[in-house]
Length: 166
Image 1 (cartoon, rainbow, N blue to C red):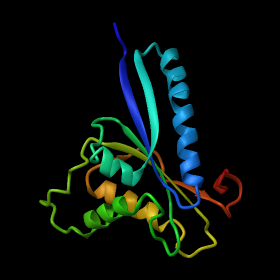
Image 2 (cartoon, rainbow, N blue to C red):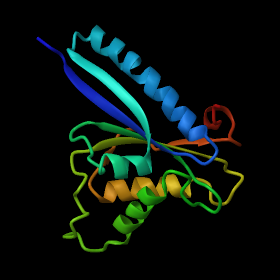
Image 3 (spheres, helix red, strand yellow):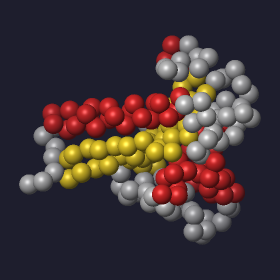
Image 4 (cartoon, helix red, strand yellow):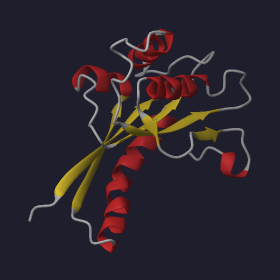
């Protein structure tokens, strides 16, 4: 029997390259790490993953969220809490979702069944620390997606577990 293939997209928005580097590194290591755990449990699923800018996901993949799977997002804030390069259009979509007050709007529930994990990168020395990742998280949740785990925060000025790894 041929194993089912599960693709886990890793989407990123990066101004200085840290989020992109993190996403690309994670996309390379994730299949091997997950496959090792699946092998131990005798599960017949093949894992694949790739890194892609959030805006490219909207344009090239037409934001076709893979149903009943996991999407991983790694993103920073830039300037005064703005979206970084490669994430402007995605953040405009998130802003549109957050501005909706009508639960009957087509955007509400459009991500039902989607699970996501989100890691935000930044520096808490800035007052706008984590604004963009927080807005993305709120919008995905409002549109019906379910975050798994805690909202990840990598802080360049943090100490211990709060330190951003480069």
